[in-house]
Length: 440
Ligand code: HEM
Image (tube, rainbow, N blue to C red; front, side):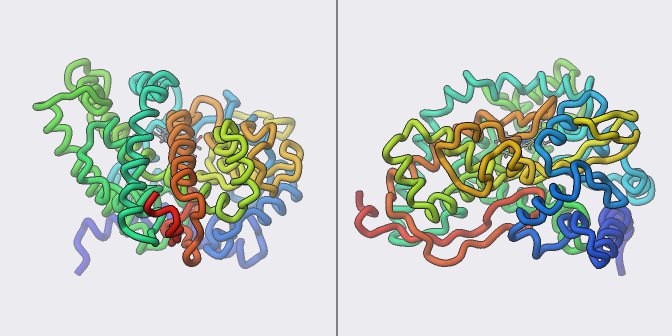
């Protein structure tokens, strides 16, 4: 017999995902392409032609529920515009179904994008949270982490070399590199990395709309486990503070009263989840692009100063975060397009990054592309990714070290895409490490 907790979870799922899934399923059957983009797993494998289709249909396309854009200038106007706020924030503009879900089904565990997450709060709360952690991610702080990141990459590559001629590049390298860096920055135990990655994979599902009951249950279970661990870890930190971000946040809560308990948990969970679940996709997507474009790898060998540009080009062409959303606070105009108050806009970051008005021949992978850095893979405006500098440094160090050590790295079977739609990357990538270089 289902307990009360299961019934409440069922209500939360029904109102937050079941209804969306049904509404979008009906629109998908009626041929509405944005609905398919939102829920059809088949499109997930290659969403790019669908973004092109969306872009051709208009600058802001109304699917009856939300507006959608894959145009770079409209995306920028929405993300930077003061007339837009986050969806589901504490501003009281959360969609009705979300509000009823909390009323009838209770709050559920604190997901990485749930209020009061930085991702789903507007100023002034957002400004207060961001101020507490900005310094740890500054350009100076990231530059100070480069040597250690190179050391971590070298250790992991030693492990790959020692394991013989085959590896799973995601499990054995792309996930562990950023996971180790963020665990050290936060002061989280390194022996928990694989567990964090497992919980993080469940938490990542929660970013998608229209989840199945099975995925929703898994995501709530994993988020709860992560949250429970985090609460226990705060107790440990209170007794043994260190020189790390979590200690500073716990101090801001317990000593300075600058953060409530929920805010503390939410910021810590977001940093951990973002550190574990995003850069892995940059490294994985980059490895896939470079092994399938040996000519571009040759360009980088010829001119290694192009590596930072190559990382931007990877972020542009196969963006690890494919979309985000905003809601209009009042009637407004975005890049010449009218938007009504309360209207939600889905910004297809991955589609805007292939807008031919900005990127010539947008499907081409060109590590020397002059304006590769004009991508919006890290979003824009006040929510511009806090970890962008860190992620770019990790991507550059990680990919460069990998191809320097194993220049003949090649696929040893088809890679497998992760099932998430907002986050785009691989969860398995079998590779062959050339025998000539294993012992190098
Ligand atoms: C390639 C890797 C990454 C990508 C593509 C990425 C992408 C993004 C995007 C698109 C947003 C903004 C979403 C929106 O506008 O609604 C964002 C926000 C954020 N990211 Fe990242 N991210 C990456 C790595 C990281 C890392 C390593 C961290 C740090 C641990 C991090 C921490 C954050 C935080 C805290 C926010 C919220 C910022 C705010 O709301 O003010 N990210 N990221």
